[in-house]
Image 1 (cartoon, rainbow, N blue to C red):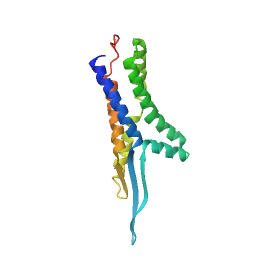
Image 2 (tube, helix red, strand yellow):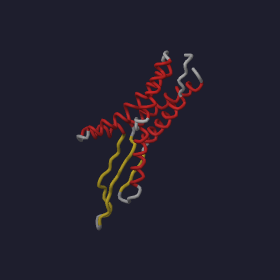
Image 3 (cartoon, rainbow, N blue to C red):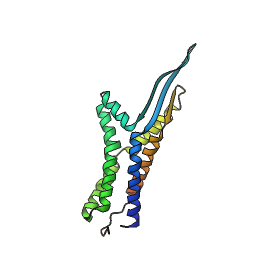
Image 4 (tube, one colour):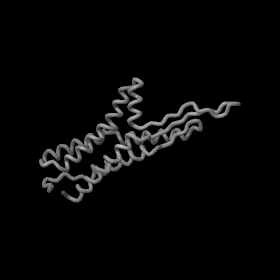
Length: 166
């Protein structure tokens, strides 16, 4: 195995290690409050969610399509992508590795995990412009962001070679 592919292998494993807490740990807390005369500030709503918790809550509240899309693009495709990259590294057939790599390159553009991270971050920043809405990013966000960056890097580093020595 080439040095590039050894590095890609290590990065794929690290990305999978980061993906799990990125999906299960809390990513964002949003709190909405109002200031009323004579009463002062009252908390109207506070919610803290992980990605998997958000999917579950959306499903329970009859938003199954949105839940499914988040599950597909932020959970299933990233896992499939990482496992497929590992297959590319260890499969014997050059043609199979080449075709799978081309397929991964195509679905990587549609995984939307990186877009999801940007969306969460924009939601966080948008709440900072309103004094009655507060948001806090949690460790799950940083794990998921790390997964996205390392996953992109591992895909870029991986090289499909005709004569792979395993």
